[in-house]
Length: 112
Length: 115
Image (tube, rainbow over all chains, first blue to last red; front, top):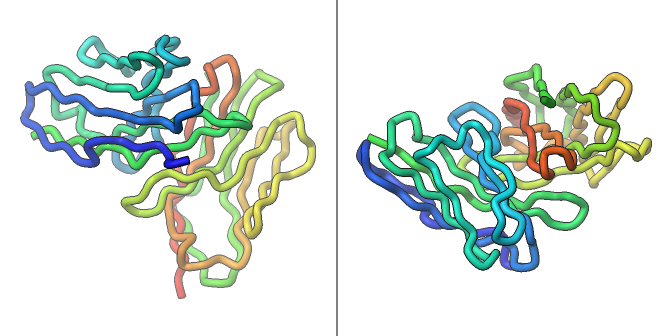
């Protein structure tokens, strides 16, 4: 069990650029979740996958956001035409036994 | 929609003392899970303790215990014998099957343990 990993850990980009984040869940976990956390707030749910199927998307996930989980393994979260308001920590988690979610270290995004 | 409220933005406790963090939630569901997660400064979110709503017995994990009052929709976390390493943000979270087991977090309580 190597835990949930995320890459990159930090990303600085200019407004209008596209960015992509990757999450590798714990290998035997079928469900994968993405959250966004802004400074001083709790994480907010964005979307989740059951294997390769994206089953739910939050209203926070605007049209500029897209997530995929090809083959039900790793997942990517892409933000197109980034805005300063996208600056946040993006967290990934996978669901294990006892309905417990295990979190990765997060990707901190700063949009200049 | 379920809401989770943590009414204490910041708390402080001396080393070796006991502290209780409050959490209330609102739901019409009867089956759900409640969690406390810890997020140390610049480090990742880790599970502290979990409680299944159908279980009347309060969960305990070493120095951490909860007071789960289902009728009052209250889920407080007690940390005994506080240690410097307990300094962190603590988030209360709600989960049930209706939301695909996605977590609904409170805003967090920043806990500082002082020597």
